[in-house]
Image (cartoon, helix red, strand yellow):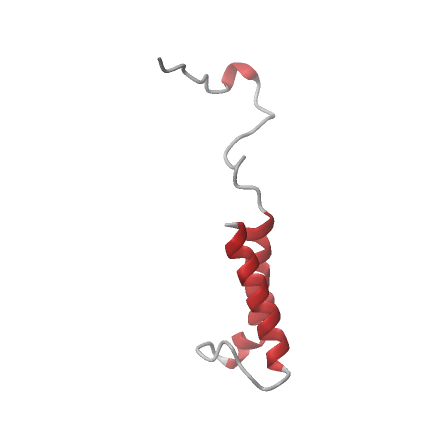
Length: 74
């Protein structure tokens, strides 16, 4: 997910930079949305790049007695 996030961030920077040269990288979007597309795409990319999905779904604040016990498979 981190790589996809970095790709989206690079795309957002390119879209922002090329918009000053008159090149629209998001012509499929309406003009009102295409104006803010670098911010939106960059925000999604930032979320994907810097969110730690390895600990997703775990909560360290839960007392030990409520945590799932890992079963040993033999």
